[in-house]
Length: 304
Image 1 (cartoon, one colour):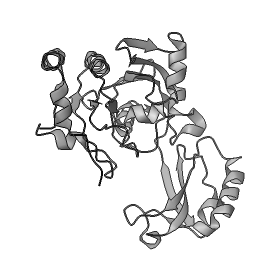
Image 2 (cartoon, helix red, strand yellow; image 1 turned 30 degrees about the horizontal axis):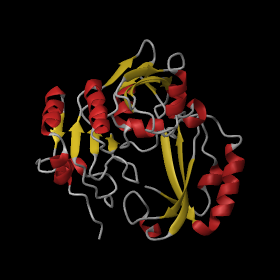
Image 3 (tube, helix red, strand yellow; image 1 turned 30 degrees about the vertical axis):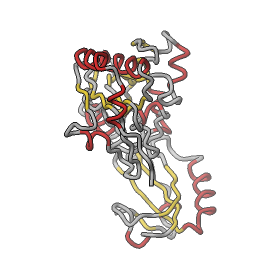
């Protein structure tokens, strides 16, 4: 059994006046272990993660983020940043520490004339694309719609349109970021260049991004996305064939190869539940991008 730090005990050790002043300065809300919403606020996508933070700060703007970073540093509280809370390792939550919850910062603003989108960090990738597609274009994101845009982007952003438009970090034009000293800074190719270089693929190690500016590209809509699974003993043949086929494939055609144990959950095929398999997800963003027949006519089991 895992021993947990008693979160109320950590709160009790904080200076009461400092805590009151911190609360008064915030536009957002403090959630403590005895708050009604605490259980929902501490739960993350991976149900195996069971951490108990001392305080969760549901921020409402960059100034709240800066104050939270400073408060955590001044009080020696370990810090976690929560956006989509989708990280498998549960990095959006921290035992006995302070969590900055970004979910209220979820605005997407599209500048159709300049072909850019300004995205706050509490937004999920599916919400970003839903908004940009109202105007026609899209930006590269990760492949799972429920992932928060910070995790998708700062980790690289390996998604459905990467063969033509690159990764999420390739489309990133600038950010506003609160660095560990509690200062709000801008980073771009022309300003704080080293910081901008570091965050593109460096994860959340250099600060808390409070606004992303993305380049937009004319895309799609996606006319087909096909998921196929092959028996695991065919993996070597599948990988070699995939390499050969994709070397000449259209840029509008992207594939993502997967391997692992198939759970008995939708949308996975029932006949593969509990088995090991290798899979290929094949999205295309143009009706002229032909699906390679060699990838779709083998001994396969498609996702319905």
